[in-house]
Image 1 (spheres, rainbow, N blue to C red):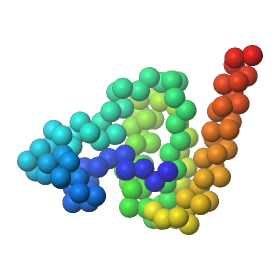
Image 2 (cartoon, rainbow, N blue to C red; image 1 turned 90 degrees about the vertical axis):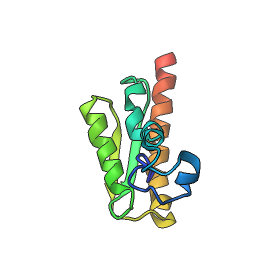
Image 3 (cartoon, rainbow, N blue to C red; image 1 turned 60 degrees about the horizontal axis):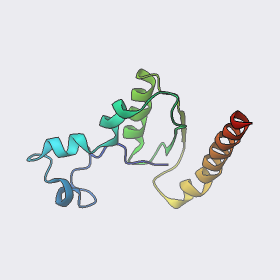
Amino acid sequence: MSGGVDIRPFPNNWDMAARLGKYAGQPENWEKNTVINMLYLLTPQSLALIIDCGTEDFFFKVNQNLHRQLMYRNIPHDFITRPGAHNWAYWSNAINYQLLFMNTYFKSQLIKKQ
């Protein structure tokens, strides 16, 4: 939900430079520690993935890009966008979709084991 899946567009946020070094001086740290650049580690069909982000969320564009990259790599996932921002009003509604997604996934796993 509203994931920070690419930290590179936000070099001055969340005290990231204290952890990774400034982007200008340590770009390799930023490149290897951002989710969007780790997709090569995913095996298609190995995970159930859901991305849910409001269209007014400051993370919307990076979540859209993650969706595009997953599509390009043929990695199945659900991608949900609705009006909303990076706030509790959005997440309070989104949790219902998340729980439905997880419930459906876990039920399917039980059926496979039977």
